[in-house]
Image (tube, rainbow, N blue to C red; front, side, top):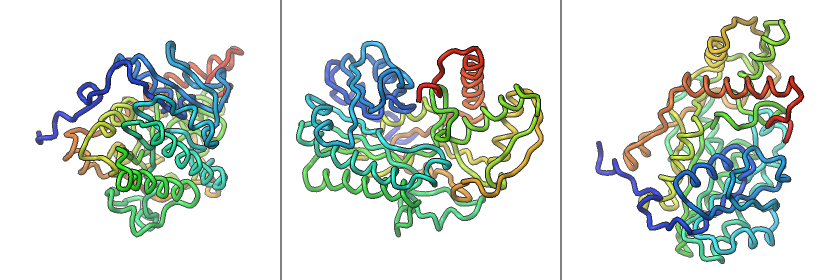
Length: 352
């Protein structure tokens, strides 16, 4: 194990249990999970923020202050950051490839969120600021082959990010770097690689591939048609990170002195094709389906994987939940949601 095997996390970073932690995008999947994570660590003052009405939040954590405000507006950002010691900005218009490829303007507009949030956090005297970036910031010329090499942090430049969402992430990373270089504000930047798990979007167009495929398998079983449509030709490859690895990784990255203003991969390096992902979901669901391919559907880059050399060297850790294990938990949760919907009960998807 390297000398970095015991990273400086929130437990030893000097953050007091009654210091105010602000989390934007907290009505969404990752933000809501992060609120729950910090509460489980014993932090007593968490301010969760999302523009959705409270009944539409994916998770409402008991004891957490909840504000329904649109943080693309600067006046709201100033309110949100009042008294904050740490700020975690996860607010953005985003989703799976079906959303990212069709709504580029909405994705680009998220730059307003980070611009106003980081400025407001700085003015409020926040000690640390976390920004949730994405692997979509990487040069797309390096992602044209399903057998792609894993992407290193340096592969973001020369810049050729995904249109819309990817470029917004890359520019927002620069804001974080410059606030540290010019104004001395400690910032953290994690490039997420396809986060999945329970309590997330599973229907409606914004869901990521693991949730979408689990839902399609359940729909095929329920309808008796035993068929599934796969977007693209199924050879596209990705790595998928389980939500528990994501929240723990956010904590460690934010509180690591060596990673101030330094973009770093936060993702699994377990590469899998979409075809293999479908086979895995079939196995979990106990069914074999007839496959068809929609070659005109959004499919993203041909291949993308996370090079975890840097995070292992600096933190002595990397996301490690096996896809089969995480997908089984996700399938079970979506199965419950699916059953609740059939029974006329309110579900996560129905609140979006």
